[in-house]
Amino acid sequence: MARTIDLTLLTAEAEPAQVRRLCGQALMLGTAAVCVNGAHVVAAARQLHGSRIRVAATVGFPLGAVTSAVKRAEARIAVEDGATELDMVMAIGLAKVGEWTAVEEDIAGVVEAARGHAVKVIVETAALTRDEVLRACRAAQVAGARYVKTSTGFHPAGGATPEAVALLREAVGLGMGVKASGGIRTCEQVVALLKAGADRIGTSSVEGLSGCLGREAPRLGVVLAG
Image (cartoon, rainbow, N blue to C red; front, side, top):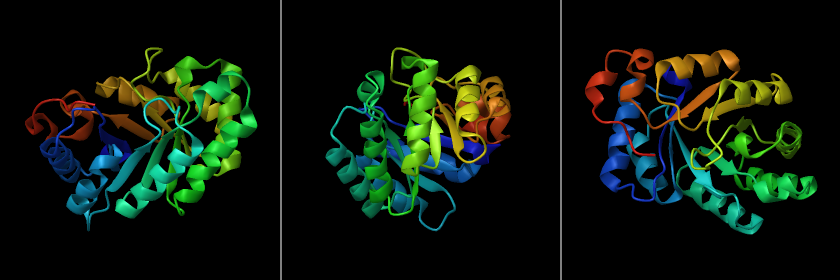
């Protein structure tokens, strides 16, 4: 199950030592990826070099409210710094007013800048209506993204739920991945989200997932911030 997990550290106050700790935990557990903000990509890529663990960088995080040009630049720099996946926040405000062509173009710009690396589109499901979620997933598909993702974990509307995951899976079928993220702290949550259709789980909690991640987890220390 560890291979479905993206360990995350996304708070503004994240320190270099915490990033090193995050990467060490990922290496010990054999997770799918670590997910960090752009400033920490170089350090994470250096520490994880030679392993199969991917470095995921955020783009337009956590609001999605920067220009498409800024998102493309963030994506390009992250890849140059060693990121092999990008977790981008879509233009949520444009989605709310039905500007779907602009939403699609915003995603497509990041996909192009990613140079073939996987792009996960955070649609912030709790902030959207059902129809808006479906349209957002369609935009992500057409734009060439590889995953849709429930949430940033920072939006007051909420985080990952089995219902949100099931809706994303319904929208994209088996042709794209689905990542659940936001407020995932227990093994029971992970199991429920995987059953609902998630392929990847984003979480900052190692200690809370000890039942999922094996015997090593309890001795890894405090729950990560993020």
